[in-house]
Length: 267
Image (cartoon, rainbow, N blue to C red; front, side, top):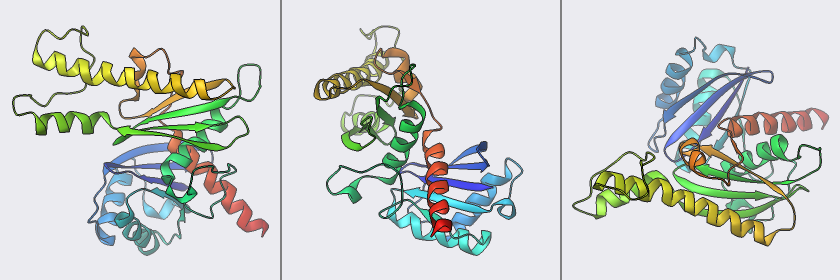
């Protein structure tokens, strides 16, 4: 079984694949001060929730945007699972040229989701190639554009919904912390509803505005895919988002692992 790990700024997502079948998806909090043994304990406890353990794992692949967490995670997998994980980064075969400058500045998670999005949504209903845009609602809200070729072209980065809500609470003394939920009306009748309107519908406007400008800059059709924590909430209000797919990062990791391990065997 293959362990896929995506270490994000706030959460770490774990997935275990049996062949092409996703057996489970788990989330734990990301800690920058992790030690090897703390990581191992967290992974073991999470896997135990679905009656799995280190002994059933045959390989691992990682994407990490938190550098201090990467070393302890790799050490934990070596020590307790006997695995040498494949780490997504420079030199890894993705099947997709990176046109970002410099290429190594693109977060590993963005490349992984872009690869998976192209594989899943890179053709229209008639089987013709089309581009994709991935809108990832994580700690940051990122927009990643992939051409029909495919090539990773770049995108946009904005503060995430959660960060914006936290900043508003921290910097405005009289405003309460609220959950980012759809308001009954864009015209909030109380402070909580007004903040929710600004957060949720404001981000709908952000997404639709950036997607409209992306479409103006290219001459090919595209599919817009949302993923991440607030994807469903924003997608319900947006006419721009075509699909919501929370399995993109895990599926992308599985594909990249398969491609690179095959290349190692061929060499």
